[in-house]
Length: 562
Image 1 (cartoon, rainbow, N blue to C red):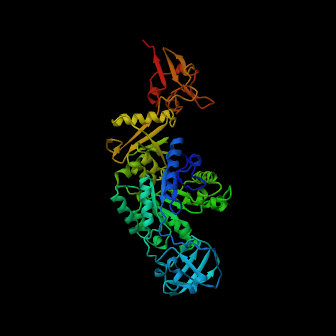
Image 2: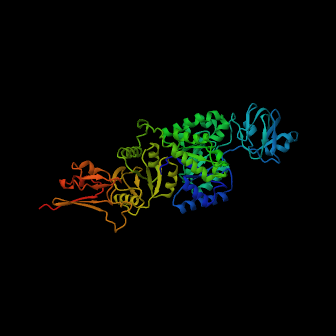
Image 3: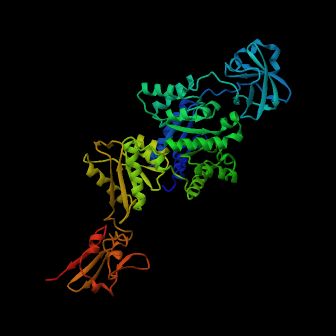
């Protein structure tokens, strides 16, 4: 994978078929988001089955994110749309008290949130439909709140209500969320997102439940409330991942503050190695159009340059007309943005007290200094790959594990390409050799390539071992076009009392022989392949220096001296 940042895409009516999910995975989707605010458990179960089937069909696992609704305050069902006009006076209150106030029959806004009036104060601001309409409270009348419309509009059933200057008493984790979480756990979802987080206690409540159920499903905390922004440091400290949910955040704090908050949160997450997702309206116009606006393309690119681990599509893929084009465009924008790499954390800012962290950073630096093809991070839990991700390695990193659950989780880790490998041996050295042979078979490495193999989270699959780093130079991989057994792949020149032989199927054209030989016996042809210089071969000293320096064993010098 050349693209390092990951793509989260919401699955909905436009994208929930097996065929479309397959296309989205191929296009670059890494994580499938299920929005529990919509649909039924039966419907979500079918989507989960479709995702797993699609993954199996194309041989690539993706993660499933169960996004809990949280205490979403909404307008309850109304018989007909309410026309709100600036200057008018209305009341808002819980639906179940509506019949008690016949005097407000024609201007009553029902809400599903029973504590709205109790929580509110006489000067509260009330926003409807993502802030498109605005009202100001001016008095309470028993069970209802009197409001005056500031910005009018047409208000429909189920539209959202935001109270930006009110402390909501409802918990972030509702009874519905509990039922949805248990459903997700029964279906082995890989991540769970908690909406409207306000303090670290909101996250701990869910952690306690997961611990009781003996589940270690990572929690993604959605930052969308002003209180969450104020408490961001303590929230980052106890959560597994952060999502910058810019939709409700913009309504609650003001859109003009969102860009600065986004930068600050990404920076804080990068500093402590906490994965962060930037979400909401990233390619919003692609819900109805085949191409994004230039501003949207800039928005995605700037999130990448800020250092986000992943970017998310919502309505674009859930209900939009162009879900496949949206994922493809998102991937293209990321790849282009990553050509201008963002800064990575300085070593002096890294937590090197962890042995695993130190090993992963060392492996990355060794790979960079030796121009390795891959850093192969072998992991049992995914923890060491998460540490590698934090360092923002410049190397291609294969996160190798024998656990499908870990493979799926690593789909959210920046710069990590998950790779499933089922070992056949219990011996450590045998396992490493199997991994190298697997890379050769998959043509992920070629002769002369260097790979750095590390295992840093305590175990190498079943085998408990010490942390270690190994550098391997690849050899014995037939070059393209040399697999035909009838083709002569040997170059040979006779010299005084001997012969020089080059196996072109093994040669990596690494130039080691060219650099070591003082007689210019080794040269490159117009195709950049190493060949024997017939004009200077007779000068060979037969000192075997080129044989010793060849990393792939492609050179043989046969001496017939008596």
